[in-house]
Length: 72
Image (cartoon, rainbow, N blue to C red; front, side, top):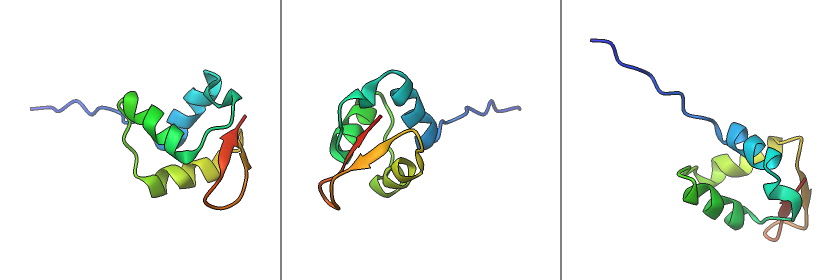
């Protein structure tokens, strides 16, 4: 029996798709990003999503700790 392996996209890959779609044209909080991803069926842990946002070279972080937003 062979099992088909389904490729699950990483949080970084999903963020890049949102960026390409223009989701980050206006600043978004971590909560807004998480809710949007959940509505699309992606439920990443907050820590993993935060790290992906930090590594995303195509996004700029604005604001201070606890009140940050991300924008293109």
